[in-house]
Length: 121
Image (tube, rainbow, N blue to C red; front, side, top):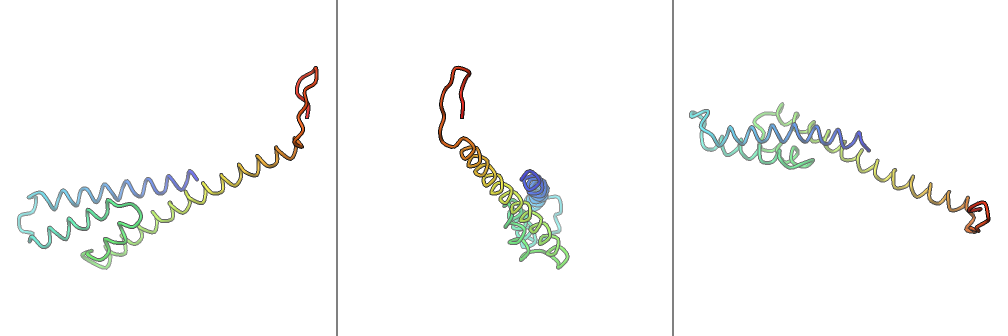
């Protein structure tokens, strides 16, 4: 469970930082020789990278090259893997807790009586 949250968190935060930097670069006048179409495309990619898990997959379409698209697909797969690990860990934890509660209830036998020395099962 923890590993899933770490994988998802680290991959999303680095991707979101990269997306924010791309958006800032597209909105500022750092490169005046870039066309307005190119700025809009860069901004679209950056904004899509701010969305966790599905954002990198959606950003593949306006990617400038096949290599960039492949990189975005890998980042999306890493985020999806982290999400799957986190959800699987939560489900396993819930299942384990139910098992422990059931086991304790069976051990108690449902009959609790008090005795002079304390509680007896």
